Length: 126
Image (cartoon, rainbow, N blue to C red; front, side, top):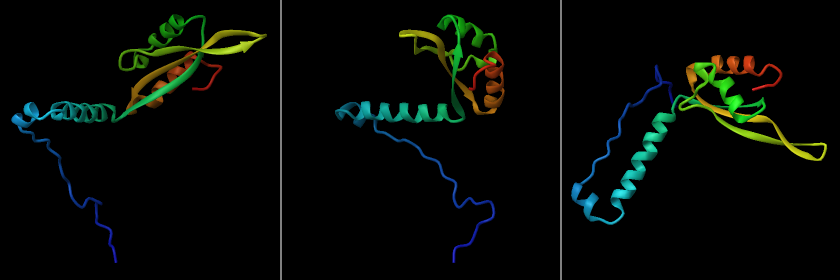
């Protein structure tokens, strides 16, 4: 006999971390554990609303691919793209004609970023 609640929210709550300075300093490992918990929470909060986009792009070097990507300010990601060679074997030789490019973009800019990557890399899918 469950019934739907209009708006769907039963309870709104908030968490708080409370610590004893004496325990943080005096008990072995407590400060390190607390620090790790805070880092994990911060990482989660910062990552909310961010998407990782990966695209393979043809290029002569990682720098050349990075320059093309950075020519579009909205594709710079958090600190710039990560560009790595994609190794292929052609005619018995290993070569890197393509590069994997990875950026983080805000959710609201995801579609625009994909469009810009496709414009930079028209022959390949993102």
